[in-house]
Image: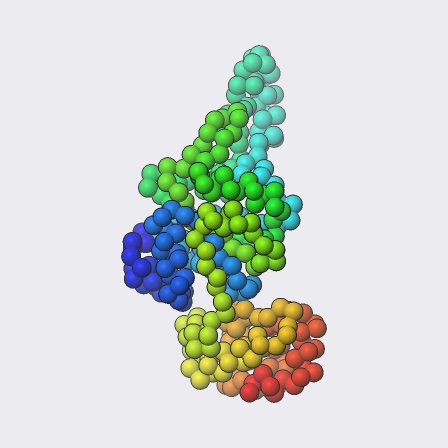
Length: 292
């Protein structure tokens, strides 16, 4: 159970090795206490998805994740009928000689529904439980799906014609993320507590490295953080995120390099940069500039 204070939430997140600034902590606290979705925007790799994971871990609740993508429809996100089980039930009824009316009544019940993430979250929010529903990378989904979410996130209920209305006893904890590849409609944002997550400062990123990569020297963690800041200042197609910083730190340990050198940077650019044009641009400008 997450403490119902800002200080308690900050401590709970810290126990999960998650570094949240005051703005994010306050936004998450308000979302939890008001029963409103938490909408997080920011560049890829700044820890938006991780917020939902640590909230679930800190509260001891189930994390239910809906990964958005182009073409995602309501059936894939909410529920689908289990046609294979329905056909098997029809054959069993026919074998027992029961009528068509019994078939229709039996196979259109809840037990023949396959719950997808949205319905799972609504049904799990019972008996004092508040599962964490992560709707990840909403900007990848179509606007039609975004429109469907408006009603769902307002009432946390869904009507299934053959079954009836399914309601959550209490609002689940909802975290929506967006990398801002397209703008999310204002109507959805108004239903949420909004927060922008930026890249961490070099000091904070060094602290993250020191906590997440045990055994790395403090001065090396600081060198890595400053190098990442220099890379992000460049005109790159895909600036590296914090996850890439941690991968870089782990690479230093594996290669047993005691310091961040131009040679190490040149050999391991593929750890932090994922596009050839970005790697070529950094090398053309001189990897020495990354080291400082």
